[in-house]
Length: 437
Image (cartoon, rainbow, N blue to C red; front, side, top):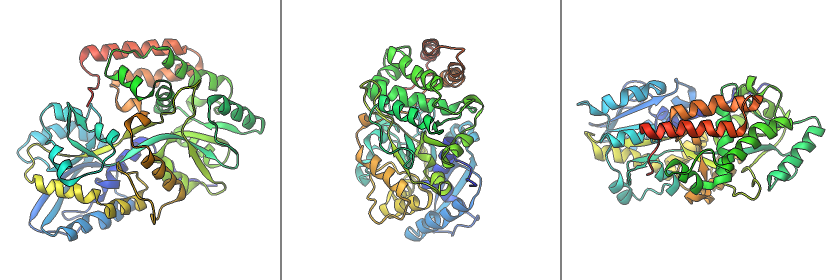
């Protein structure tokens, strides 16, 4: 079987801009999109390279917006996503800022812009338009008690499984380990996992600490005085990066296996389960032909809660110095309309940050199940965190490289937790830690 290259989380976030905003706006102002009326909405975004999906998005959203609001013309300016952070503050302080822009909602991105006074509050827009964004997602675009952004997609880290190999969803880690032992006896790899790029391990870590600590416990570390070297954190590290390794639940040579290759083990049926994000749904649908795929949240660890990590990718923001605030709000409101959101979901399989009625939605069954699951869990406390989008770079560096050392046995779980705490303490001292919305 030839499988399509898997989409990583970073690439998915680039396409997230494509999903609701970024790539959908390719072609305006002379690149394939139709011209609207006299009032110009300046839009700034980072985007992936042009693709057939992005060009289809032009037809769905750019031309469609201008037909629905003929007095407006969308003028799009794009820079590569990796360069966007370096130029956005300069553009927002210039005499020609964008009206609306797509940008990461994390505290080190949107939060920094809010602290610098470069964003327009959207409190009034939310009240006037009645935007029904998940409360927990809205919190990710709230800084200093004021909401400044509109999250345009969400993601969740779950366990995908081969229904031919996993007859019953495990409720506890003990059940999961029994299942993994049975799978090994049948010559199957229990979990597809590769950590050559290092960031995949952070997702497993996020799963472990989210279950062990829950949202409140993580908040007490991120925004309070609790510590990363707590026993619950040590246990989560030991479970995923020592116990599962020693018990042979991962493929041999985890640190040399890429994310793509690990996913291919699952697509081909060699591995029974795969712990990764909802960004992989489209790739699974396109790649798996020989069995049905289901999903479940990682089960309880010694009586812990079940709090799958969930996060927000990009969001839509309005510049403080926007020339056409009303036009920017009109554009955001258009993207949040049910009919527009449904078209985007059907084309890109990206998950919006608001409840969805999936009746009649033309999407794969797996994607529909994920949508239904997220729509039921509307409370912030139902989810944990994707840690690496909330933590500073010095912490992430220790997290990425350190888990590889735990996997090889050259560092213990407690040593890794202590190093994470040391990195966190340094970040707090220098003011690089996130602030609560």
